[in-house]
Amino acid sequence: MSASASPIPNASSDITYITSELFEPKPLIADILRTRFCVPDSVFLVEGVDIVHTSKSRRWRAIRLLLGDGQFCIQALISPEIHRLVDRDEISFGSYVKLQNFRVEWRDIAKADSASPGAGSSGEAKNGQMVYLIVENLEVVGWNNTLIDHSMAGRAEIGVDSVEIESEAPGDSQAQPHSREPEKPQNVHQTVVTEPESKRDQEPLDIDDDFETMAVSENKTAHNREEVATAIVNHAQNAAAGSASSSRPSADLTRPVKLTTLRSIPNLPYKQNWSVNVLGVISAISEVEPAGIPPYTQRQARITDPSTDKHVLLTVFLDPHLFNPPIGSVVLLLGVKNHRFDGGSLKKYESDRLKTSGSWWFENPTQFTWCDVDGLRQWWAELGIQA
Image (cartoon, rainbow, N blue to C red; front, side, top):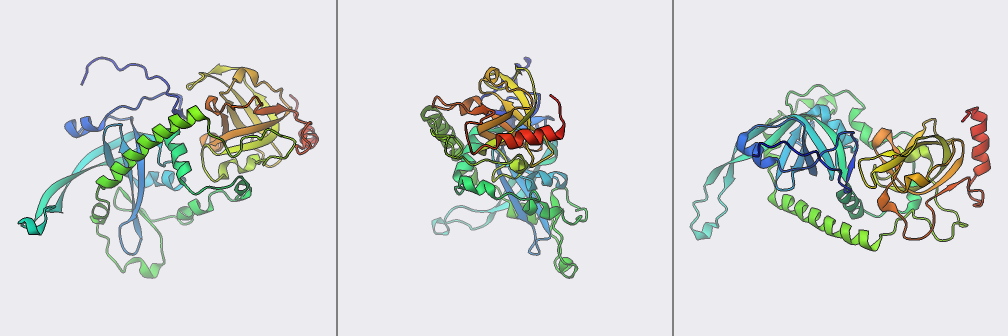
């Protein structure tokens, strides 16, 4: 290892940073295995998330992350205190996580002889070692835009009209594990899944079950690596060709486009990079300021509408010097993307630049009859808010 000071990391256009401190992914796993020392605040890319129930009763579960550093991949069992981040989809394929408190452990395992019995194999088990990390605490610090886009593209296609399906109670399916307070598990990497009292003591818990069930799959790791490489190639091709967005405005805006209310931003089909069209009122706006990603300048604004009391954060990276609507004006935003930050926010990236000559935003768009500009103006005036 070099003794020279580490250079200040540069912002990558392919990474969305959600903390003020920039990071630069670098190989770490080889050093961890060699020295057995885990450097706090090490950053890894999440290349897989597995949830495994460790007994037939499904009372206990363990969550494993496959963490990559660009060269190698290692499995990590996370403590129950941070399982909620997986339940809320804050940790997913393509996330960057900073491990604040973690350790490396080895475990002796028995593996069958891979040689064919017909070739004279003894058929005896051979001893081996499995290495893994135990993570007590971590922080999500960003996302790899290429992998997030690739992961979204690989799921079932959801039409634009499906955005109408808005949950009044956010994340009902995700909130289920927290509907009852679980008893505290005795193992650092397991959480309890509550079930009827009659079934609780029918089956003893084997603390080794999680390791046996969650053996490292070389095929899965290789498959993830192939997905990463394919995603990078596809991302470069799409950037050159200019892929179309489902919410990208058509050439004829006299025809209505699908509008998304601000209340539904946290509950969209995807937690990040779902493209939407929004009509709202500007309640605050900043000057052009430095940013950590291209074009390294941004302008931030707050936008609101009658669907919510929240003033949603809007960050503009695309020609921020041209985005300057006055406070109190009604704006139509086309093709902005949602983000997890601030409990649900909107962003317009430099990479979202339209290939057509049309604008992505309109101030007081009274020329479009399907935009209730007068209604929003009246609502804003009734609030009695002065610019």
